[in-house]
Amino acid sequence: MMINPKGDNVMKRLLYLLVIICLIITFVVSCSEEPLEYFNISSAVEGDYTYSVAYNQATILKYNGSGTSITIPSTLDDFSVIGIGDRAFYNCTDLTSIIIPNSVTRIGDSVFGECSNLETVIIGNSVTSIVEFTFGNCTSLNSVTIGNAVTSIDSDAFYNCNSITKISCYYEAVDKPAGWNVGWDSNLSITWEYLGD
Image (cartoon, rainbow, N blue to C red; front, side, top):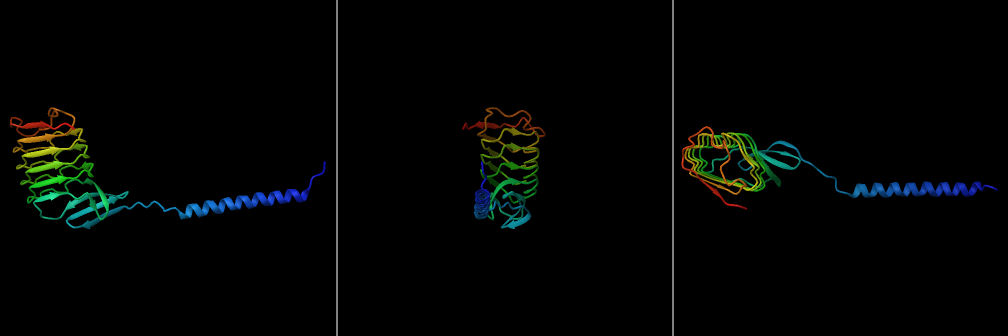
C-alpha cells in the first residue's frame, strides 16, 4: 500500500484552516457580546441621600434632608435601592412619616433611632426582618404597617416606643412575635391587626 504524502499535506492544511476559522468565529462572537459591568461606589450623593453601590445595587447611608413626610426612592441614579444602612435616618427629628418601597430588602440597626416626631411607618413587601433598635426611642410612633416578607422582629426593635397603638401586619404571624416589645411598657393597649396576604 502506498501513502500519498501530497494528500496528507492537503488534509493537514484543511484541518489547520478549519481550526483557524473556528478560532476567528469564536473571537468575533465573544467580542460582539456586551461585557457585564458591575459598579461599586463607596459613596455618592443624589438629592437628600448619600448612598453606596455594590453590584449595581444601592444602599442608603445617610439622609441629608429635613423633610417631614418621606417616601424612600426605589432608585438612586438608576441603581435599585435595596438597603438602608445603620443609622441612616438617626435623629431626624423633623421626620413624621416614612414609606419604605418594595425594592428595599434590608434595613440596618437604629435606622430611625431617636426620630422623636416619627408617627407613622409603612414597610414595603421585601424587607425580611426588623432588627434591634430600628425604631429605638421613636416616642411619637403610633402606627406601623409591616410588609408581607417580614419573618422576624428582634427584641428592642421598638424600644421605648410608648405611643404605639396600632400595628398592621401582612406577615404570616397572626399574633405578636414573642419579645417584639422588650424594653418598653408591654401593658400598652396595642391593636395587632393581621391583614393576611
